[in-house]
Amino acid sequence: MDRYAGAGDEAADRARQQERHYQLLSALQSLVKELPSSFQQRLSYTTLSDLALALLDGTVFEIVQGLLEIQHLTEKSLYNQRLRLQNEHRVLRQALRQKHLEAQQTCRPHNLPVLQAAQQRELETWQAMEHRIREEQQAMDRKIVLELDRKVADQQSTLEKAGVAGFYVTTNPQELTLQMNLLELIRKLQQRDCQVGKAAL
Image (cartoon, rainbow, N blue to C red; front, side, top):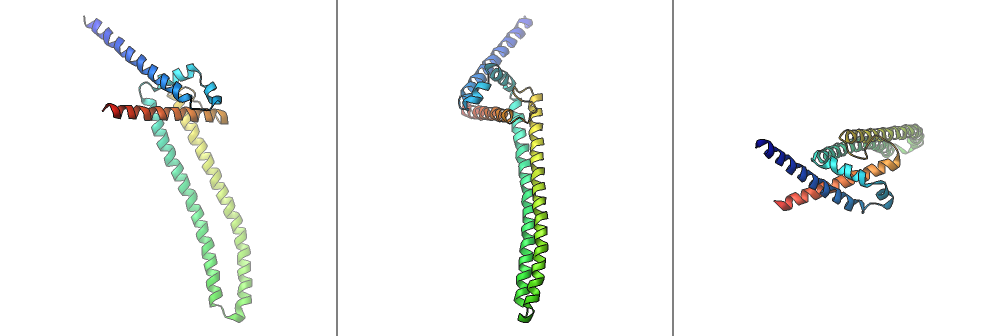
């Protein structure tokens, strides 16, 4: 008798999962209509069904949320590093201007041409340093782009390993845009689920 009760529970679980899969698939099909037609065509029924299956237990929602949080922290950290570098350079420029201004204000008129010549030489040296500063900023920007590219590849790999349809490591701009659209669909579904859950309470 217990054997039949267990079979009934399993059948009920399968029916609930099938209903949940249908709801997710239906919601995905509805959300896909909001995408540009070029991306709608690339998201087949099979891809959307596979995506809905991956979303069934909610783990992918948690993974996506975690990846978003990591991405935001990384972006904030990289932005702050770049801002610090810019501020250091700005402070150096201001200090030089201030030094020149103070020297001119305290200089005796008959020494002013000598001071101005010295300051001109210092400005020429500073212009060479400005070139180095621009190179340093460009190097920082390249480092930021590489770090963000690595983060994208990590995200793609994580989602691929989690079995999320449409995700694999790529640098193809069209595929990246498609993956971004898939992430947006997942995020919107997650927000819907949260709103439905709150409404049920």
